[in-house]
Structures are given as structure tokens and as C-alpha cells.
Length: 141
Image (cartoon, rainbow, N blue to C red; front, side, top):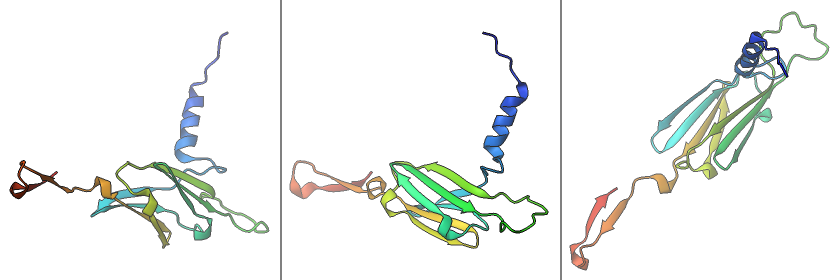
């Protein structure tokens, strides 16, 4: 069977995934960095009610879901440029992070997550013995 291709269909699909649609906005910009013994992730969510933000961790996948509602239903909308609806983002976390102790805060439209490094991933000292208990040396790994 011959299939007719539309070169603009793939471009349109890519644009919807990158920029979202009015029904599914894709805007949730993020910065992430390491600060001491934890990773910090900040996501811009201006105008989002903190009560509408859900954060879940399953295995090593952190999922953030937030919703920005539109104007009241009885309001006459003159311009609609700000994205609204449900925002969704997933972040794959490394095994070296402690997903049991994730902390979240929301201030001035920024959701901040602090994810500590797991104890098992931190450097530790291992003792080496030389066969005699009094000749022990400690080295760092």
C-alpha cells in the first residue's frame, strides 16, 4: 500500500511536543546543579497555585505536575497569550541520589527541589590490613 507523506506533518508534531498546544502546554523551564551533598532543581511555574502542584517519585523518575487555571468563566477574554492548563515534566534521577528525602519549596513562582546524595554514593574510608592487627592503614576510595 502506498502512503502519501506530508512533510509538514512531522514538523507540526515536533512543534507541538516542543512548544505544546493550548490544551497541553509544554512550558516548565528548569535549572539543575550540584550544591555540596545535594542536587538542586528549580522549575519556573509563575501563576501556579502551590496546591495544584503534585510531585511524585517512582523508582528513579521524579514527576512534577502543575496546573495553571485560566480566567473566570464569565470573563470576556480579549487576549490569551499565557499558557494555561496542566504542565507535566519527568526527570530521571541517578542511582546515587536519595529519593526518599527529596524536599520541595515554592516561592515567587519557582518550585525548588533539593535531592540529597545517597550515603552509599559518598566517598568513604576503607581500612586495609597487612595481616597484623597493629599494621593497619586507612586509605580513601
